[in-house]
Length: 141
Figure 1: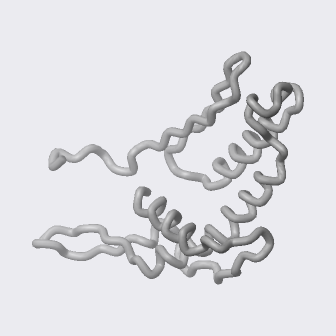
Figure 2: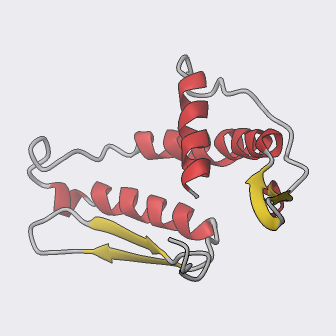
Figure 3: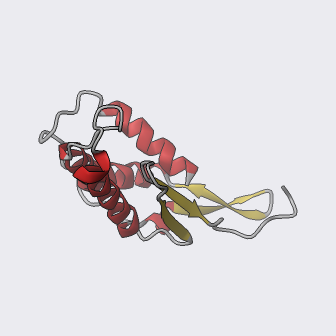
């Protein structure tokens, strides 16, 4: 997962000159995320390695088809911090932003993910996400 986040960040830097409504379109990747791993033999044992070309296609497609449109939608919400909007709770913009993000995260269907919105009185909400490890603990670590 860290590799995927790194790839998204790298792609974000590549899109430094991005402007709303002017994103490039990429072809849908030919593989799904689980297929991005390839197996290879390393010293007699099976090891997993990422197919970097397929990862790049997957990340480009995710960025262009899902992430950028959601960012555009997010920035249209006139949500401001309590320092700039004394009536932030009554205005409901913060709740709109939280709902948008929660719905997007849930739509990603990440195995083992638990999401909770923590709300305390007179505080802005916090989105807490926990993702279980994908493999059992190893005695080798």
